[in-house]
Amino acid sequence: MSQSVLFDAPGPRARRRIMVGNILGVLFILGVLAVIVNGLAEKGQFDAAKWDPFVEGRTWEYFMLPGLLETLKAAGVAIVTSIVFGLVFGLGRLSSVKAISWVAGVIVEFFRAVPVLLMMIFFYQFLSKSTPVPSSDVPFVAVVLALTLYNGSVIAELVRSGVFGLPKGQREAGLAIGLTRSQSLRIVEVPQALVAMLPALLSQFVVILKDSALGTFIGYTELLGYARRLASGEGNILPALLVTAAIFIILNMILTFVAQRLSRRLGARAGTLLRAEDAVEPEGVPAPAK
Image (cartoon, rainbow, N blue to C red):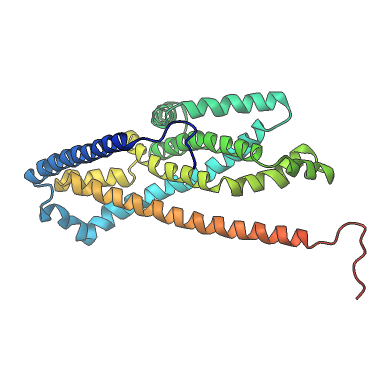
């Protein structure tokens, strides 16, 4: 008979209390949702006329698709630059040189602690007044810089934790065949850590995609900004936001699907390599004559 280590299993009376509490909580949430939906319905937010613009080609041609392209552009560039930033500073934190490790650690911890929106506002103001960046490009550059620094710092921590999570024998094997510590990191440890941390890396890509919507607060017209423009003209803010949310959900589902396929493929490839290594003849044992 198994027993819980942290707490005793609830008895019949406690289970009834928990069940009653769960039922009351669900009923309360449903009641709040019913009040909200009823209020929106009374204001006509669910009328068919509010949804008609989304079955018209001009809505997608001039609002939703251009906004989607801007979102994908900012997120795509930020994903690439975040990976580069994360690898560079992740390796920096793993460096055997104390000065490099310390500087990389300070930079990573600083940008992890600063909110993304605050960085966007800062870079927007800085680039607008102190750099030769064209004014039309300032919002895009500010969004990409903020997303890169924040998410790149998180990826750097993923790299560091992924390498620390590997068996010690990986580094010892690399050193045993004549690699230096930095070569062992680049050739042996980091590639394996990237495969192991792929689910967490995917989650960070989703964060980048969603956080790109914060650019609307500094004038970057991405999907949410275009949806707000459409809603201001049509008076259908709720349908516009719901359609925008549905598009983000679909994008995240696609990204998840691609990452899962990639993870399975990399896992299968790693298994094939391990089986091939196991099949290699031990050193000193002559191969059978042909």
